[in-house]
Length: 96
View (cartoon, rainbow, N blue to C red):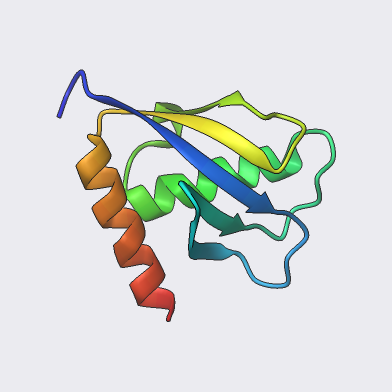
């Protein structure tokens, strides 16, 4: 999968009691993080959560758009869109 890159749209709920990938929110994935939306803390928490759920190195992820908002675009290097969707669906199923 080297050379592959995926752009993922996410909707973030910061300050949640419990962090996790909730499921679909339209064309995006809904993600909850416990970090507060201040000084990039929630963005870092989103990238850590996605790194763990997708089983990719943290350095492979980057917030491309939406740094200060709930709707974000995240770039993920080294994984296809199909594999990203499969792994995120598996993460939701594991927490249900």
